[in-house]
Image 1 (tube, rainbow, N blue to C red):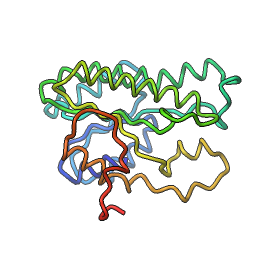
Image 2: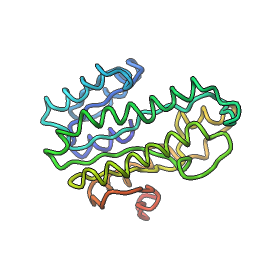
Image 3: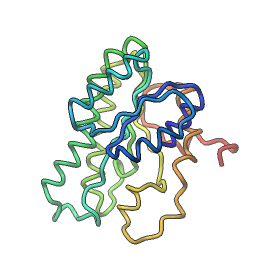
Length: 216
């Protein structure tokens, strides 16, 4: 929710979602601007439709941020032992659902000449032991983003690597380990906002490359 707070502070009207209704309501209550919070699962077609309809009611989508994702089994297994049902779920949540939401949002985004941010990871491009499920799903997201950018030249499509952050998912990847050395998600929000302000061509973005000395 760090990005939602940063966008709201700049005057964006937001539609946000999450699977945990209580956590979502708590997060929305702390956002100092107009926000519509819809609890639900992005793999649910009805929930996706509700998100796009909510955006339409406030003027239509200028920006879609696809940040939905699951890690998969924890501790993460080697590909030789990866449960295939779990792998299907990882792909459904991390790849299929964001694409499905993008398909619904595209008509409005075309009208506004908007932008799509697909959150990715260095695991999409590096061969880390144990990251075969999540990493290959993110690699699929990146390739889908490249194709979408080619097919929708009037839009901006960015696949954005925020770096290693102190998130619940990152903790799941390292059960029982101390990850307090990772920065908080709020630390990369200025780089996200700079991306939106500068509006570079579609492509892969590492937020670390957008940091300025004032952000550090």
